[in-house]
Image 1 (cartoon, rainbow, N blue to C red):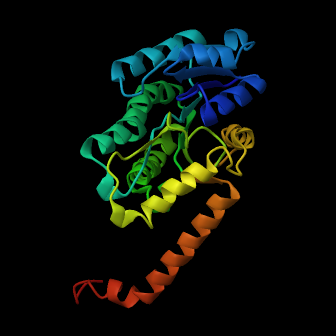
Image 2 (cartoon, rainbow, N blue to C red; image 1 turned 120 degrees about the vertical axis):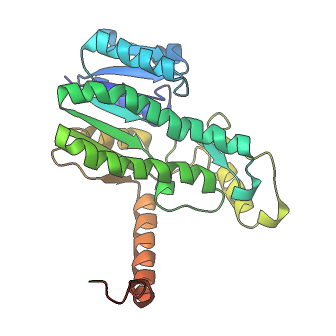
Length: 279
């Protein structure tokens, strides 16, 4: 039986991952701002579920939640950093307060939880850290610049952590979902910039329109994504990144092709910048 610690577990990916892990016979520390909602959604799990109220931006509360999980189950085998906050709007439209609010949850909150859990995993010399980013953490689009930048940050942090933790028996895996039929596009998860600049009507403005049209009509099935995530947590030699959704695969492939093309086109300029006597 594996012990999971999941943030943002009251709905969306977090809830579906918790549900799937419990169905597999594992135990779950499911954290969310509303633990009662988690308990209601996962009723019947018995003593294999510990639901904990947690705001990931409160570092003291994070430490207490991790301690409660270890006290209840003795260890933590899989950390799922899933709690997140969205922001939709052109980069210029985003205020300092709006930007900081997204970074507080998506980056600093993730780091707080990770700092609390890693000492447990290092003592065990085993564990897996699954950081939920987004296809927007690999290729950013109009209207998603600030949100995407938080996910780019998490991907960079995750790549470094993977190298640092591998000798200690701990794997780090980046999960990059495309568009899935969760509540992410709802006002409760996705905030829009208060400022709207008309010059961005054909770029970020179009993304605002897309959000309204596609909310709860996305092609991705969160339950199937959760099954893939729970599965990848148990495989040997896991990938650095797991892309989820055909749209995600297409966007990643398109960016890789674009980067390769530009690299080839500008290679001569790039490599000509060394000192003449450099080896």
